[in-house]
Image (spheres, rainbow, N blue to C red):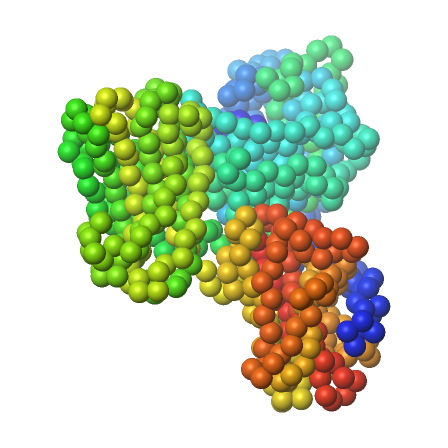
Length: 581
């Protein structure tokens, strides 16, 4: 809606048993695969709107040149539904020609699935919308997610959109129209969004019609409330004419919210003060160098998230110079790290066409606090995050991966501005810094597994990074009988089949299409340690007759099958679920 004023308001013998297995939830349960049961559900079963849940608007909406006044009298609940009614107001009693309704949840959610079942009104000039907007953040810095908006004169079309930016002048958005062949005004349809860290997907009647990913778009994690409204007139829909039928209703059957049973966390970070926000931008966790004229500081008003970002520019000293900020972290040698940050160049303080550069570095030291270039400096990995060729007025994400030398005790994340001797002007902004260490990822389920011949329950583990783009994950099955062979299984769905329908001592914890890692080198032996490990290629996950590429927001469930010396001769581990960013 673009409406900022609302802020106030048997290896192969068992193969056939793996095929075509799935489990459905019990009839009548409101459950969505991967999401479970809703944490919020409003069925509008009463006789009036519950104002403990919903804020009911009583003001004129005009940010998009709409012509209505939102009045509480236009909001009603009856027959198991919410009704937002648009009327012509010949007396202009509210100062507007039209009256309509808008409601908004008091509660806000950060990430999750939101689904609304609704019937849209017919008529030129009607603009029904279902959208998410934060209460406390400025627009569009907190983001806006438009699940559904439609024009009353186009009954077969609706659209979805995502908005972001640090202020109205830098506002950006992506949108997509959708037509399924259905008349959205002739009956009720389900409109949903699935909002995860790094990705947002939009659905109509269970069909995904649009998905976007960072860093191509901005997806703020700011908590948002649900807004339902029926606008009249405006930039999107045009204005009513003689054919427009009044009154008209936007009818809502239910509103539901889910959050994952194992919520996707924001990118885990070892960085302190990743947004340069703390203590009013004091940068106590970010020592600076080359800061001779305030050229390295926490800047208010140009953030990706929050209110601040790091601003860097040159010293203007008539020679090539280097300025920046850094942060030290205690580490162990051999650890793998990924550091990432968003960078911005603005057209009003441009470095376009210059030799200015902003660089992100990951440095390693054998002694804490050692000087750069000293004998205790072990090396660095660097990447340019902004230069004279960078696009302007849009945040760009860059990441860097490196392995610490074996004698490392400290890592140093550094952001550096290099100004050449000609001293050209311009600045670079940096925000939302992350530093991640490879480690255990995912969450186990369906356990403990049935004990095997060792008396122990075999278990799954996953190590690496859950960021799909890094393609750095290894699976491990442990507590296995020694000297037995086995392989890993994978599926997008979870299920539970005790004893694999008589084909195993263990329980199968996967459903739907189950892939098997049985290509050359993938059938493994547990050896003398009772474990086996497989590095994954996330771009070639076995599914059906081929493979599937892992994308951000996708969940894979893994399990291991292995031979055993008791019972029917095989067993399985528990399962592990990994949601990739």
